Image 1 (cartoon, rainbow, N blue to C red):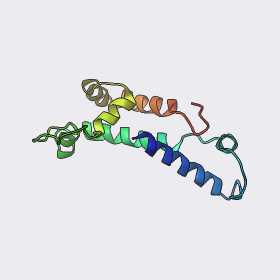
Image 2 (cartoon, one colour; image 1 turned 45 degrees about the vertical axis):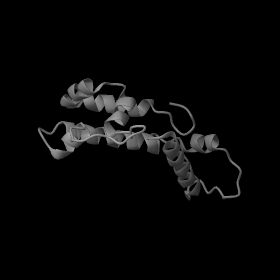
Image 3 (spheres, rainbow, N blue to C red; image 1 turned 90 degrees about the vertical axis):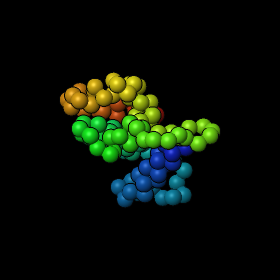
Image 4 (cartoon, rainbow, N blue to C red; image 1 turned 45 degrees about the horizontal axis):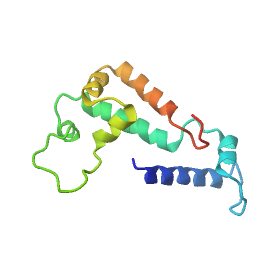
Length: 133
């Protein structure tokens, strides 16, 4: 995920929280995002939920014996890339989020209990809307 996408997701989430009937914040009220997130205290941000779903789907695909999705995800297709900067691949995003290499990821996915613990650790360590962890 790019930084611009993360900012858009966070702003959308705060926009939704502001419009909830529970808070009853008028659109003319000048309140900062930190005060709203302190009032709500969300357990997980929308961005961390997206990362959690992405990691669990990656584990699901990688545990399959052999499938088209797995070969596409691992980049075993034929041909080359275009000239210029390489596009961000799905597995590159998974590597940056987890901080593991591809062989380590494949080994971690095999053990479901360890993989679930890894997912919860990663998603809990992501910063929330108010900037805290």
